[in-house]
Length: 329
Image (cartoon, rainbow, N blue to C red):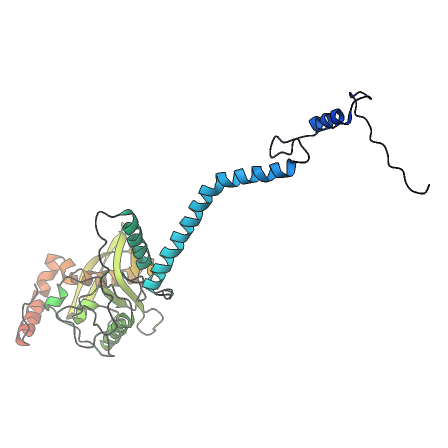
């Protein structure tokens, strides 16, 4: 006979040779390890038991899955709504955030959506209107025409013009109008014989903007400070003679800190900080005083100021003769 004989199955240890086939199968099933998913030991039903165990586990995880899917759907819907409301363009690089636009407004829309779902005790305030390039900067009642839109040489105001003592506002719009104002400040400063610095109030623009150039022969040292603030003064001060474009033909000794630490923003609205020393620190403090309505003669000792009083009286007479009103003191 041609063919291969099959090997007879071996009888497990501990089972009688005379055991029936059913007893032999039960003994083998008892020794088989569980499938790991259930307590099933039957070979024929193990696959079905595994499927049943998987289904039970899936049913246990179903609430968490539904919650995750719902959360993702709400997030996607809110982001889509805020994107459609605010526009699909990212804010320009180095462009300052203006209330009512950009990511700040998108967060505001998100807060409104959350408040609509969960409730809010007080309604969110409406964002202020954004100024347009055609709107002039709020320079005050004495701001000259075209100071922020044309290339003009601005007239430096003389003491006792009230603009020199008026409160100056922070700049909130950073665009081409502010750049034009800074350019006109430099243009007007260079028009004077010995001008090294100029503040916006000196030309009738009551904004916290100042420029200077400690080296007038070169434009590399031109510096613009917007909304500046002195955050630290040196413990050492010195006394040197100063003059001012708003006080022609006058000079006087003024005590100033030898170095200062300054925080400000540039004309793009980008904040920066600097430590300024020496003569440049004196120039900065002089122009910074103008932003606070302080003039350099306020810092001159009374004994020296008495000798300058005839010059101050002459400036007052010239101002009144020219039709000036409300002279400052």
